Image (tube, rainbow, N blue to C red; front, side, top):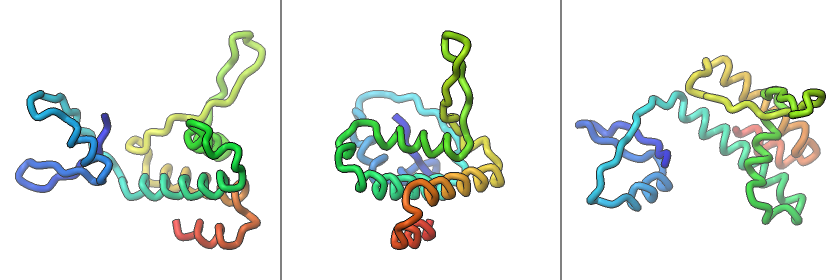
Length: 145
């Protein structure tokens, strides 16, 4: 389970989201849990990026009613945006003659602010070009991110 927390003072931590609070409520009071604390850098950036991708997905998905119920479609959409933005690895197939493109697994906490900004702008450009470049209301809403 991954939950995002922030210090509340006096050594206490509090969840940053209602979803996290609901996850913690499911834990048993009679058990001891191991917790690993990692500093999460620029949570605002990450939340904004995920909201922008979700917004783009909802807009894109609305144009294709057949895929709305497809499981894991959002994850595939996010991975495709990442690859189109230029953040991918080329992996060779077992035949050794052909390769496929795999989205990089990005570690935002290990990226500099400039690297995060570059990634954000690359994703924004892909969304702009591939998802809704003819829909003025979508583009206006997208610019809010």
